[in-house]
Length: 581
Ligand SMILES: *[C@@H]1O[C@H](CO)[C@@H](O)[C@H](O)[C@H]1NC(C)=O
Ligand SMILES: *[C@@H]1O[C@H](CO)[C@@H](O)[C@H](O)[C@H]1NC(C)=O
Ligand SMILES: *[C@@H]1O[C@H](CO)[C@@H](O)[C@H](O)[C@H]1NC(C)=O
Ligand SMILES: *[C@@H]1O[C@H](CO)[C@@H](O)[C@H](O)[C@H]1NC(C)=O
Ligand SMILES: *[C@@H]1O[C@H](CO)[C@@H](O)[C@H](O)[C@H]1NC(C)=O
Ligand SMILES: *[C@@H]1O[C@H](CO)[C@@H](O)[C@H](O)[C@H]1NC(C)=O
Ligand SMILES: *[C@@H]1O[C@H](CO)[C@@H](O)[C@H](O)[C@H]1NC(C)=O
Ligand SMILES: *[C@@H]1O[C@H](CO)[C@@H](O)[C@H](O)[C@H]1NC(C)=O
Ligand SMILES: *[C@@H]1O[C@H](CO)[C@@H](O)[C@H](O)[C@H]1NC(C)=O
Ligand SMILES: *[C@@H]1O[C@H](CO)[C@@H](O)[C@H](O)[C@H]1NC(C)=O
Ligand SMILES: *[C@@H]1O[C@H](CO)[C@@H](O)[C@H](O)[C@H]1NC(C)=O
Ligand SMILES: *[C@@H]1O[C@H](CO)[C@@H](O)[C@H](O)[C@H]1NC(C)=O
Image (tube, rainbow, N blue to C red; front, side, top):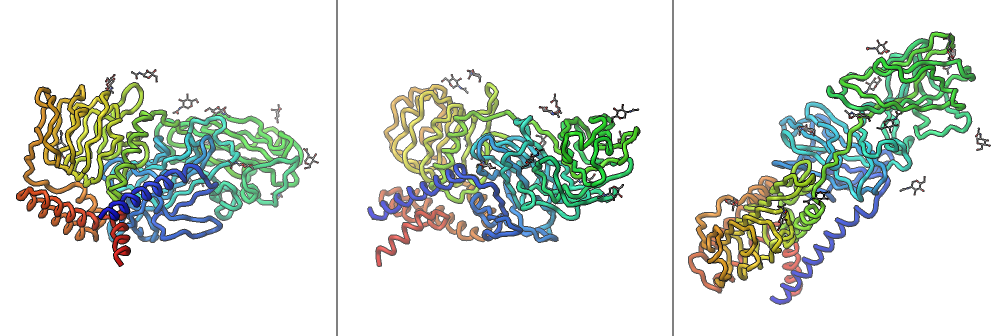
């Protein structure tokens, strides 16, 4: 018996260490490229890129689907509220490109019907709508050793099929706007034939061939005067040109006023253009002249790139017109990029609350691997949508956690001690779970006004620290296995309390089990049987109330628990069995 208990705890510690490992490792090492194929069975290499499955972030294969007609694999998150974030390793102050793919389609005859926001950290990047295929790309500067890429619950279930994170070492995109996120609108390889990306593009940007309207021109690339460029040569060696004007229209911009960054890339491809003045043109964006008498060769090289800031609404008209006074050649253009400039959301959640909630999650995970609620606790606890069970409020410019309701969520194990250090918490509801062990000590500086820990398996005594909390008005603790020596102050206090009375009629449906069942489907039967056993034994024991009966009950309960995902216990049983042989 002792040995088994020991083995059990050693295993628990091991699990904890392994968890720490997984949490710490991604934030300390970063590869230049990270390509995640959601729901893939294993890693694979495609077009010189290594793709990894997303089971490091989400283990549950039950949320995986194939989307018809493309038969693309996607993860469809069944969350009721909040958000789902992929926590990705980044290097602080380095620039990254991130691309998420959201294919439209149907699964098992049902068409996806979802609308949700995609965000980088707490800054929304784009709205995805399942009516069509979406590829969302953003360029950002990492503010931490990790970056959350989140799907924020809107209408229907959010889904995703792949994430591509590329380190932009030495890129200049954000040099004049480090606090912005650039959302890709258009990246065109004018006159190009097929897509160009890695390995031609070292950042794995995807250059799409565009513009059949104008005459295509191409020539092997030679740079004069040592011009260097980060754009792939394959993109620059094709261009479009016209004897008079080039006009590019982008009609699908957001209807509100937004700032855009437009980057134009020029390489003179015609050998007969060797002098300044031979090819001169004006550049207009939305009828505003941005450059007058633009001459590629004027910079002393045959390569030039220009960047413009534009505020636009709904559409953008980019026009290059040959000057009327003696330019021999009409305009040329090799490539362009248009980005929408989004201000980083500066809102934040109280650092201490964030740290403590992450600790609460880790503590809960020790006995609740596979709990569906915990699986959704990703990204910032409050922003953009709070974690399920949390209520946040604004306080002095930051978000703080004021309510924590984990009632009826199928939790077992110890009450996380980090909960007692959430200083802004006003109400705490842990009722209708299987929390066991001692009630932790609460700090006297706590602002709690209401605590409900009723209907658990808590032992020991009701701590004085809890009863004497200065602001506490409500305290329910009945239906536990607490002993009877109540602190004397309880009677004199003005608390609204159940005095430990157990008015339990039926536990009702346990939310956690419903959630787990909904998510696991086939495990439903196992869990249902487990739950029935638990309930039967509980009722029997209520009647008997004998010490040894309690022990038997506990043992059976443990047995029932073992059926539900508690693998440290399962391992310890396996070890015990091996030892028995
Ligand atoms: C997406 O985010 C924007 C900006 O924060 C917000 O106005 C909009 O309501 C969100 N849409 C959905 C479906 O969540
Ligand atoms: C960026 O690239 C340079 C070489 O071009 C390399 O020396 C440096 O280590 C790289 N930085 C990071 C953070 O990978
Ligand atoms: C564009 O705007 C940024 C600030 O948003 C500014 O720093 C930069 O100089 C501007 N660039 C040009 C070409 O006007
Ligand atoms: C270009 O580079 C070569 C050697 O790399 C050098 O000899 C030459 O002077 C450079 N030309 C200019 C214009 O900088
Ligand atoms: C990008 O611009 C090109 C040239 O105007 C156009 O043909 C293409 O449809 C645009 N692509 C997107 C995704 O808007
Ligand atoms: C666009 O940029 C200007 C100057 O950088 C700024 O004042 C303005 O608020 C921005 N507009 C939007 C819609 O972001
Ligand atoms: C260069 O310009 C001349 C005269 O317009 C034209 O005949 C020739 O095809 C052009 N060459 C390239 C590579 O575009
Ligand atoms: C685009 O801008 C150019 C130059 O300002 C103008 O001549 C042209 O009519 C515009 N095109 C459209 C479709 O608005
Ligand atoms: C023709 O364009 C040049 C710039 O390339 C300019 O300096 C000159 O004044 C222009 N001539 C006339 C007659 O407009
Ligand atoms: C509010 O925030 C400011 C600046 O962050 C800080 O100086 C101040 O102490 C805060 N006030 C309270 C009551 O926490
Ligand atoms: C705690 O949550 C349960 C629902 O699960 C609810 O019935 C109970 O009233 C709540 N306790 C308090 C003190 O609000
Ligand atoms: C919490 O209580 C302390 C006093 O114990 C008080 O100073 C503080 O403002 C309270 N915080 C909140 C968020 O109510």
